[in-house]
Image (cartoon, rainbow over all chains, first blue to last red; front, side, top):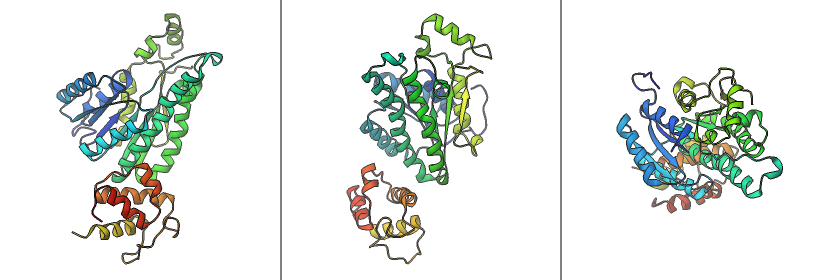
Length: 255
Length: 80
């Protein structure tokens, strides 16, 4: 983010961004840190690399950082991260539920193992993290939870039924949690990115990439920073009266 | 500083919106209109903040009375 506010928009806030070792999650973590938030990074594996990334972020922006490693699909691991967060920072103000896996398959070729993994990470993992995060936030009667879903979750896509289902579930999670937590001062919203330039989509065949890019009304592929801007808005008090919303970030893409 | 048991009683009164002198030692979940599921989560947050502890989900579900709450808080290192 190029612009700044004084005092920083998120000064004194503590944030956790799951799946922040790269891609959209990394960009969101950077944006939150750049605007004054202490940020806990999370990655599936490679604690050394994540710790180095956290140290670099702390040095660059003068904020506190943590590195949390493990699988969001493992409730015991999630519980451990929140115990660490509580022990270190005693609070959580911003939670970005971003960790996910993208596996495409035609309906007839989706194996039970693949279905389990996608639902376990994208849906059940998000629920585990939201459950624990909300508990920390309600202590202080304030917080912003941001679920990163997908345009595939709002519009569907051929060959992506399982992934789309896993992300569509986050819409119900967002709407329900928003209603349940609003009386306690916790806002819950979702971002639905479209075609964003990340490792996940770069792995698609070039012909598929070209076809998708051509369907974007704004004429360009999105960047992780585009999504991070929306997350920053939702995380901050600029969105103090916004809850239960799903905000598209897709340049006018129609899946 | 009040005794832990008195602090827990005060947490119950605050979270459930009870009078300052209301008896809480025999309270049980849903035995009074004020202790419904929504108030239960508020009660959990109030207890966690009061004692600077973090309850497990199993604790949240099991906390069915003031007496059980004493046991749970004690499990988290509070001498109650």
